[in-house]
Length: 137
Image (tube, rainbow, N blue to C red; front, top):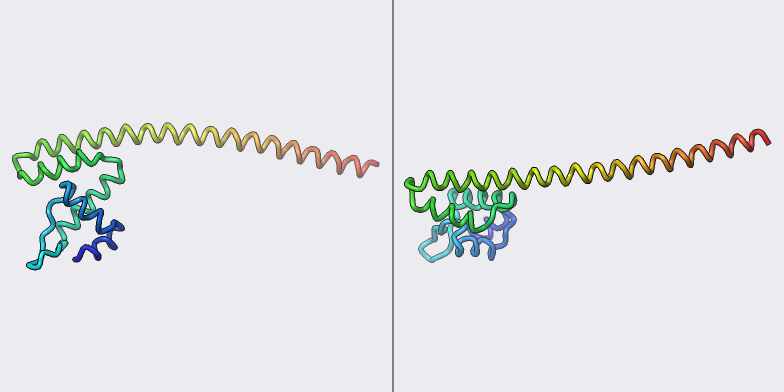
């Protein structure tokens, strides 16, 4: 696949894809004889992984380290696992923090809704009282 096709497939600009490769966020992409990047399944799988990891908040430095370790081969299996485990733990902590924030927001919204329901009930009571006065008078 060309860089344009990959760019469209993953919703990343060609500049971003080149940047990812230049800084080592993805392994070097194979090239045609004329020097044009030729993205295959493996390159696309790396892009997909990095996009997912970045979306989850994993730091670029950690991902670059992961790719570097991967390129060194099986002797780095334990180091890669450790890196991923650390990143998972950090993500879980962020998720707990986000859940706490979401719970707080939901509580605040609930308070507003309860307050609005009280106001609406008061307005309905006032409206009913006026109708009662009109019927009596």
